[in-house]
Image (cartoon, rainbow, N blue to C red; front, side, top):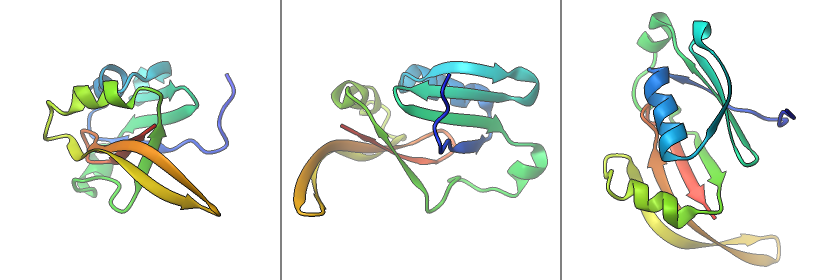
Length: 128
């Protein structure tokens, strides 16, 4: 397995709930895990992500939503399919699906995207 040069590692409150969310809702694959550390390494296409359940001490110093001020963009090929899963879970949906326009140097690009919160409140933009 080739590792990306940047791989975010998120502290989560419950590794099983997070695993269910990332694997069953978003379609990530568990590459490997260390149950004794409550750690999993996930991938989805070119996206790599590490999740580790925080200790009681770590979690006592964090408050929901985790990752304030940070947002992650996941580039996918099935934004409509994923959106259909989340539109029925209004508590996780942060922004409805929309087409957005961005200037990149002298070019205008368009993305179709929506935003969600994971179970610990990490902000995720799903974009195609």
